Image (cartoon, rainbow, N blue to C red; front, top):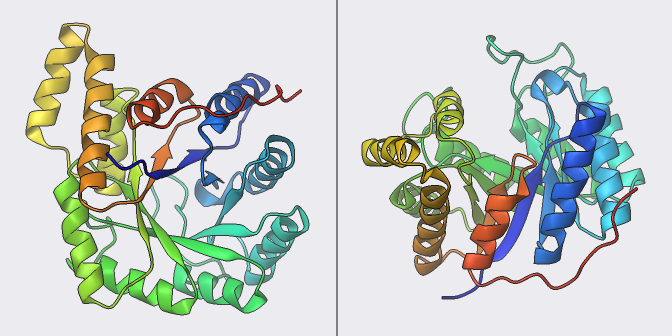
Length: 287
């Protein structure tokens, strides 16, 4: 099996204990030599400063290339571009440009004077010439998609605006990704589309995530996890499911995989090792 390039997503800590867990996760996964790691932006722009601090610390102290998330939510154009300037000043040269999620329970509404869409944000970032820009893609319909082809249309617009690659929302069915990839190719999209993989730390939690983002939950997989949980084999099934999904994607021509770690490294590390990627270095512990 061909070894893929890998990348990991982390989120900024909200407490001292969470900060220790994050740094432990980064140190556990950094020896797997990811191509890059991403740092998320909270719903409603809630973690803007923490995203900058976390991304800068990882890049400066851990020797990893960081793609910092940047969204349109909760800020004017000037404020959003000032955040991008701060990323650049910290040495961050990659951005994952997103529309972003509004506060829970509300629908997205552009901030007065803010960017109305991720396409507009990508275009503005591209004009600065400072960043490699990544964007999001949705193999299964985004909850706000107006029709089955909307996600392909939006991705094409973001690529045309200056993005150079896309990372997908997580999914459980490899065929959903392959169908989406084919539709993107037919629409003239040639930029790399990186599958997003969610190693299942908790099946009930994964289903809640899936409901929020529109990912379909296969009935057979739900039944399998219910049985495995009852029998105390949920961890084994989670590992098997993730490795099987990744293997299917790799055999289908995928060269890059992006793992949503939830700042919990153990399962992601075991999946990556099962794909034939072994740790190469040991980092000093971040104080």
